[in-house]
Amino acid sequence: MRQNTHPLIFIIMTYSETIDYLFNSTPLFQNVGKDAYKEGLDNTHLLDEHFGHPHRLFKTIHVAGTNGKGSCSHTLAAILQSAGYKVGLYTSPHLVDFRERIRVNGIPVNEQYVIDFVEQHRGFFEPLHPSFFELTTAMAFNYFAEQQVNVAIIEVGLGGRLDCTNIIRPDLCLITNISFDHVQFLGDTLAKIASEKAGIIKPGIPVVIGETTAETKPVFTQKALQEGAPIHFAEEEQVVISLLPRDGKNYYWTKDYPHLEGELGGLCQIKNTNTILCAIRILQRIGYKIKESHVREGFAHVCPMTGLMGRWQRLQENPTMVCDTGHNKGGIQYIVEQLAAQKYRRLHIVMGMVNDKDISGVLAMLPKEATYYFTKASVNRALSETEVQRLAGEAGLKGNTYSNVADAVQAAKEAADAEDFIFVGGSTFIVADLLKFLSDSF
Image 1 (cartoon, rainbow, N blue to C red):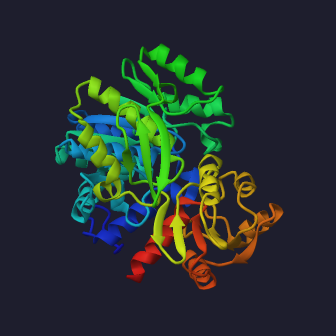
Image 2: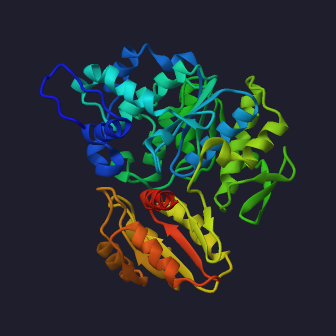
Image 3: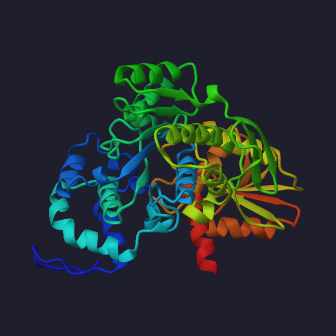
């Protein structure tokens, strides 16, 4: 950012300078972790009041959970777009460009809006010292109001109860599942984590719970009873009867939609799909005009319609290369099952992790017969490639280290034959660096 010595005059920035300002002037969780986390909603309410409570100008659907938030949010957005709604979509983190976080009908917020938002309002927000997510949430709500969206899918950033998205009064709340993640903020038991996620349940607002355990179900039941919120457990409704993976896609037999084609591959999608279809039933009951054709269109074309990336995403053939953003034990469990179902001569895994995850727990789940390429994502929270290698060695995993994702991926591609399989993951930010590398290569 260009320097300015006058304290009251701001020099107009370019888009790249504006993004650098956002990343460097506000605490960004993906870079600094816990130091970016601000407990409480004081800043959120001040920002919301400053902008005139923009979230009250459109309908919302609130999505929380440990895993599956992105797939559910994007698929719901695609279905509603197919139904003719103008749909806002707010998700995090981004993979390649900041603008991925804020979309309307799949189109990212334009660069000039981001520039203007910061230039016009920094005089107000700088004294508040907001976190990156607090400021980005205010930007998203303001943008959706200006764009006059009909409905916005709002994904929780972290937890739920104290997340800065939790000022909305949605038409529907959706909680995908509970697994161990961000335990330093949300608690060290599934019940404690569930309590934080259940914080998005609102008085009288229906809530769909995608998946429960013996520890988490009573938490949700009690919170819904306390708030007088109709609660629906998707796994009990069992809308999805069976799944057939084929050619990188999933084909579902469901109670409502026989032979439903899903663009998103991955075994984890069966539970996401069950959750989404349960949510669709409720949205239809409360007045959303969603037909069978809209559901089929949304499921079949969610990626081009919403820009979703990194969910068991097939990047090339001969050798096959796939990436996935699954990064905790709950997500890695499905990835390991998915890898076991693949046909290949040799398996190559490019991986790195961040320093606030259950690293040893994840590493213990990974296949020992694979050749590993240990690397580090370009965020401050990333664990060094040598430390990942050391911990992986304790789990019986073997491989070499690479200082960046591009070098690790290149090494895997050079070592792999046409019949081999390359998987890239372990962290959302490993996938982000991979996609940036591939984007810059073209």
